[in-house]
Figure (cartoon, rainbow, N blue to C red):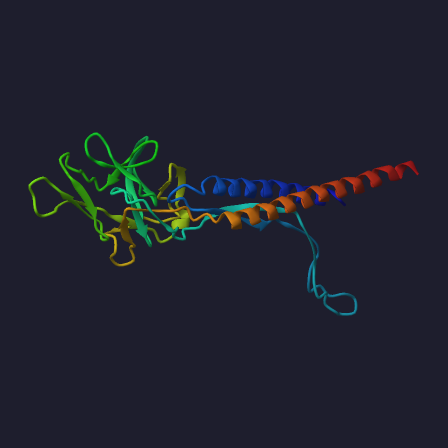
Length: 268
């Protein structure tokens, strides 16, 4: 009956609506430094088994294939693309990019203090001289790095050492060491907005180290990592999702017409 078609097509509309939401969010953040695009992954639902494969008939022959009718689709998860975005040169001393693997660590409060992770490296100094992330809440960088009020210049090396030039000092003074974190499964990180991620049981615990060592990327001072959203790809995916949405709506119309014909049979 066309009832199954109605359910399948309606599940397709719901799943494609979610996919369009994900694509729209990618496009909205195409100019957000450090942003990582996501994609919606789909999976099919249960199948109604009308005939089993391999069943013998009265002649002893086996049925070569079964007869299954699917019951639609759903979004199984959203997958983050952690491909490194292109560097954007800003020449601002406190703009830093991780060229390769690694997340900056910042201290946030969500009921209690916890560590969040970000690929965004647009740092500022707060009123106390501490380095803070340049989002709406300004969480402190971990480990905390304080820039002296009389510092004339700040240099951040590719291995994360933060050096300042002080009046009357010929040598640069090291005031801190930036660290980055890696995860065995970064796709399992929890997205909380503000360009931040949280550790989860799926991501595993972070491995922390200095930039430009082992499997950690190097730091580039005076640059930001551009969003890795490709607008052309996203627009193509948006058109595909829109067309699939229209086809599912046509399936609903066809199923509705079929049911209308069946309901009218009793008149004859």
